Amino acid sequence: MSKASTAPQLEGQRLNSVADLELLRQNRQEQQDPNRAEVIVCHGTGCLANGSPKVAQALKQAVAAAGLEAAVKPLIKITGCHGFCSRGPLVVIRPQGIFYQRVQPGDAEEIVEQTLKQGQTVERLLYHDPQSDELLATVEDIPFYNLQQRVVLKNIGWVDPTDIRDTILRGGYLALAKALSGMTPEQVVAEVERSGLRGRGGAGFPTGRKWRSALKAIEKKGRPVYVVCNGDEGDPGAFMDRTIMEGDPHAVIEGMIIGAFALGAEQGYIYVRAEYPVAIRHLSLAMAQARELGLLGQNILGSGFNFDIQINRGAGAFVCGESTALFTSIEGRAGEPRPKYVRSVEEGLWGRPTVLNNVETWANVPQIVEKGGEWYAGIGVPHSTGTKVFSLVGKVNNVGLVEVPMGVPLAHIVEKIGGGVPGGKPFKAVQTGGPSGGCIPYALKDTPVDYDSLTKAGSMMGSGGMIVMDERDCVVDVAAYFLKFLEEESCGKCIPCRLGLSRMREMLESFGMGQGSEEDLQDLGSLAAAIADGALCALGGSAPNPVLTTVRYFKDEYLAHINEHRCPAGVCKELITYSIDAEACTGCMTCARACPQEAISGQKKKPHVIDEAKCIRCGICLESCKFGAVLVR
Image (tube, rainbow, N blue to C red; front, side, top):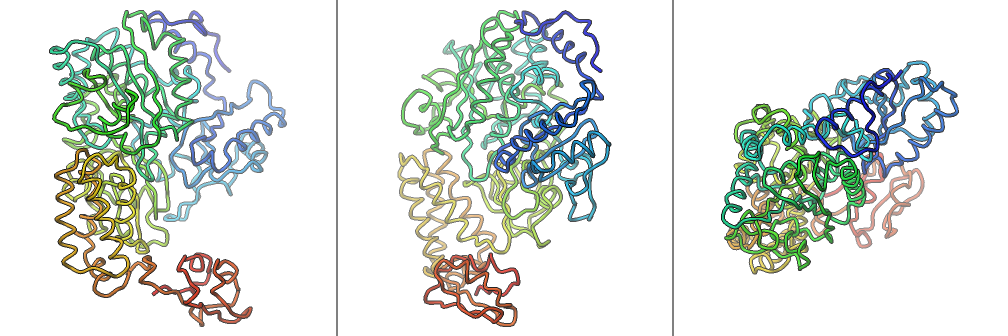
């Protein structure tokens, strides 16, 4: 049962002081019943796509139909992404922490009857660990979760992102209250410097140093100064920032308010790509609620400090993730980068001192201020402190979002948290850092995942995307794909990027057709170096990384294409043929029905054959065959 509140009621009122914020938190705490069941339904993008809204509705209907007394009626709570995306829709029942995966609306009545009423688990909905062969009942038991250390993601899966009071109950805006009531702007900057936090958007520049440089620029040029959040996440397979904005928007907002206090800024901007409608909606609602409570806008918490935030929507141009292109887009001009001889902290938005950090960086700031820079610096490794959020996708069992301390081995993320490659074979390579990152081979699986170690391996941290590849992925094809993506997303302003990327892509595509020579590989390296040295911004400057790392670690595979006219992975269409193993074929006719070209013939229950003249090498037969009868050579 909830307690009768002994604190003055502040629901619906503006908070005029830090004391008011604490009273509101106390009210919420006193209203909570620690024994009341909460049914948490994940509404992250993956779970939404798999029908989690219908699951939530079915659970509400099942609870109502069960006729539970008001005193024990569970709360159905909608939250952001829980991270284990490949297992969605996800439902967690607290306080026990029972974890149900791949839940369907038809499971709702059984969950209410067995778990909420009888206290028993529904075994068929529990997670089955493929490595231990055990059924694991709670979140704390599952390696995917218990091998992580959640700092930035600590509230996601716990709070309703559309209810600011839920965030306040979990400690939201405590750091802001501490900064406004007990710290000077200088002390805030010093704490961020002490933490060692580096920008999580890709470059890894020390955040405290950036803020310090901005203060020096302000001394020379005066105010106004702006703070900007880069939410233009465009890397293929990356959804770290999206998850934070959708699942805990107040962490980003609070971090920006603290940064604005430290720098003396009165206006901030969040640049979010238009393809993230849920993130935009949750941020907009969070800002409206914060303004209503006096946590954003004029006279924040009665401190006399004024600061507000505006959302700008990006139109999907990947290059606008680059700082100067982002600024020109906010200013209403075409998103094109400019030379970096003028730093953004000196001349950013409208030529004024500007501090730009990405979503994850801002979300770290409140915890650094609340718990101290030394606490944060104690996580991770020297020069790469704290944790990092990664999106783990590709040929890996546990696709999802993970957060680990900096410096953990690559294999820890892919094989332990990620559960390894389906089938139990070693991974071939991991692409880190997005399309401009590099491919790290299995031989370097013990490489620490930190800024310096990844750079040494020829890749980079980037914003945190990780794409796992297995033996069926061709590195020549992968490198060509990323170059094509970057070529299409390039603004075309500088010659190295505009012409160099297209030429590199053409060379890779010729290798994929069995053409070219070993001398072309050398020319490819020279061209890559020229692009890296001459490109105007980081898009072009880092674009050669996928090519350089795949040539460095998988040169034999390139030579197989060039000299042997063979694709070892069986991917490049010009170099492969499909056939059917007569002994393995059962004549089930599945492949024949699936073939779009009608290139497969044969009688039922008898071996089939493929007409190579008709075959377009689409691979549908290979995917549809359950008996391993389709061969690729």
